[in-house]
Image (cartoon, rainbow, N blue to C red; front, side, top):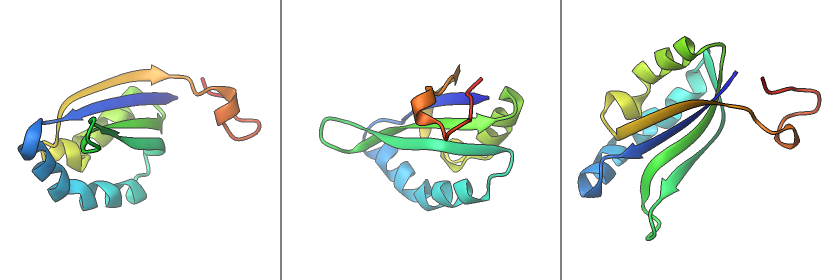
Length: 103
């Protein structure tokens, strides 16, 4: 199943500092994930182009598996994300590899 994760950073300079400090660990962790898979991700930007959050589409067998990943995600562990919202989602067929179906 697929999940949409929308997370907003702590505001201002403190949020930017936290994100910069955790960014390499956040990116490295994505390569080592086994229980969940990052389908797509992007930074959320403010009007000036500064990163203020993240939007991820994740594939996981269950919400419990996704929650296990969130417990070790560097942006969660290092308190980069102030607010995290998770919803199940269905990826449109034109965005999936041929023959794959989103539940």
